[in-house]
Length: 450
Image (cartoon, rainbow, N blue to C red; front, side, top):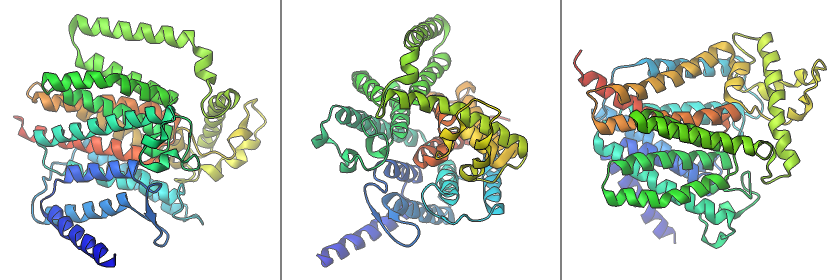
C-alpha cells in the first residue's frame, strides 16, 4: 500500500511540475475556487498545526508556485494598472492595517476569527484576482470558463433537487447528507453545506451557462433551455430571500443591458409586473415563511436586522473614520446592547456576527474601509460596462462584460443580508470573475487606438 501511495505522490509531483510550467493559470484559479466550494474541509482535511490542510489549499499552493514560475519565464501577461487595481490595493491595505493595529485576538487562526476572515475572505480572493488578471486573455479561455461553470451549475442544481426530495443515495459528496455538517440542513445547500453559498453559485453558474450557450450552436441552446427548470427549482429549494433577490436583479440587468428596443421595454415591464404581483400577494409569507426552523424564528431573523442597523449606527457615530478594528464587531457591539433608548430587541443579536457586509465594514474599518470597498465594486462595474459599451470590442468580450455586471448585481443582495467574509468561497468566485473581466478590459484598452 505504501508503495502505491509513493507512486501516486510521485506521479502527482511530475504532473504538478508540468502544469506549473505550461498550465493555464485561469483554469487553475477556477479549480481552486470550485474545489474550495465543493470539496473543502467537510470533504477532507488533515490537521497540520494551526491551519488544516485541505484540497483547495493544496491547489492554492500549486497555483502560487505556477504563477511564480510562469511569471519568471515570461508567460504571464502583465497589464497596465487600472482604477480597479488601485481600489483593491487600497482596500487590502486598509483591512490589513486595521487588523494589525488592533492586535491579534486569542483565537488567532480559528474559523471565523479576524485573521481567518482577512485571509480567507479578502487576501486569498485578492491573490486569485491578480493571477487571473495577469494571465493572457483569449477567446478560448473565456469559453472554457463558461463551459466549466455551466457543468458545475447543472451538477449543483441536480444535487439540490435530490437533497430536497430526500434522495440521499444519489447525493455526492456524502457530507451533504450529514445534518451535523454546515448550516441550513433541510434546504438545498449543496456541497457548500450552506444555502446562501449554494444559491449564489447556482445563480452565477446559470448566468455563465446562458452567456456561454448563447454563443454556441442551436443544440447547446436547446440543452440550456431544457436545463432551466432544474436551475429554477434548485434556486427555489434553497429558501433564501437574498438569493432570490440576487437572481431577480441579475435577470433585470441581463434584460436591461442585453436586449434593445421594444423587446427590452416589454420584457422589463413583464418581469416587474409579475414580480410586484407575486411579492405583494405573498408579503407576509415572504417575511415569515418556514425554512429549517419555525416560522416565528424565521420572522425574528428578519426583524433582527433592525437591531444590527441601530447598533451599527451607534458604533459608527463613536468611531466614524477608522472604526473599531477589522474583525472586532462581535465583541465591540456588546456595550451597545444595553441601550434602552430604543424598543428594538438589541439583545437578540448578542450571539451573532454581523449580517451586512457594508455595515460590518463601516463599524470595523470606518468610512475609510467602506469607501474603499464601494470604490472597488464601482471600478469593477465600470470595467464590465467598458467591455459592454465599447463599440470596437468583439461580441464574446461584450458578453463577458454583461455576464459580470449581472453577477455583480447578484452579489449585492448577498452583501446586504450577509457578512460575505464569513463565506470565503463566495468571495473567491466574485474576485475570480472580477479578475477575468478587468484583465480582459485592460487587454482591450491597450489594443484600442488612443
